[in-house]
Length: 477
Image (tube, rainbow, N blue to C red):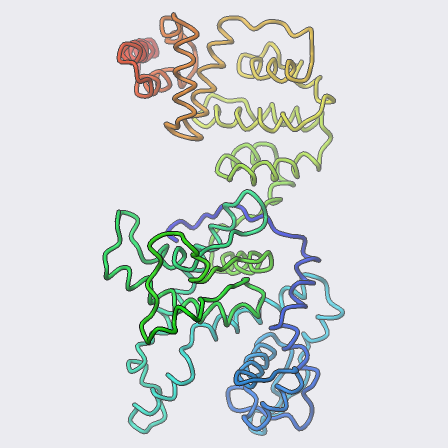
């Protein structure tokens, strides 16, 4: 992710997330082992349970099968890393309950989530390590010193961590870009391709497709390991795809039954966790609700960059903290200005005022004669059923039109919707350009130039460009 600024996340309440964290296999198992540990429990030099105690730990957790001791070992490491267990004597390998264990039952939701985040870091570290068989082979390939020969397993710890961070970063972006708080279900091939296939590559080459296939299988292993943490919900790659030999399955060439290739979704708890990691890494990762205690100027300045659903939710929360009439007056005051961002602020103001009830009417009537706000005030009053709204002057109509197009240009660029708006203006007002160039608005020339680029009719486009030239000449620019 090259940009350090993220769209806002729509987080669930901390109390709800804390309950989810406590119920995850990762944290519930870690807590259970922390309570199970006693004076006879022994750990190795790295703080892990000694091998002979792993079967008893697995039994305590009710685990069985070939992965039972591995899962118990992972749960113990999470307990140590999360502060649920403390090593009191490294030489003897003795342990005691950690200070944070009591937080799981007596702490605040924030305390519980802090413990879960520490356990999540342990899970992410485990997910970046190659399988144990590979590590055994690496030791065997060494020089007898007992040190890992990482080159023999083609494993670069930093590269693996960066790969996983990149994947989780893209999954985060996909989730916060959704219309609702629930994350999308993302096919594994698409997620792998998002970090491998260059944006400017129209069709991936065979070599790139092979890279995507390799990445899919790496991710399949990692998401299987991460699902017990509560970070993701994961449907693994269909084992039948692997049954025809040792070759990895190629990515699907169409979207028929793509779920067989693995599907992952970031959970609400996972969204919270990844946002916390992004903040820790220095990213600007806002959450919906961050602006509720800020002024209307911050609301109007920042929400244009939000996805529409997030902007709507942020505005609703901001309004809920204020009396409607006071909120309307504050929004209108913040919308004024002749700077280049002012039209977009007024557009955001108009959208925010649409969520305010009729008790805000006095604020709108107060600005009916304001050159910058009178037009949007009339629109609001009319939409809310007022019958005594004075008609706008021609100058106000043209000023509001220029302001609206300038705001749309800033918000969307040359979109299809804006082109339709431009065509409609030129069609409804045959003499539009003959008058528009005289409008005393800072963006008049820029808007007319844009209309010239957008309109498909050459004669209309020429008239718009000519009007833009006149506007610039009038302003002496």
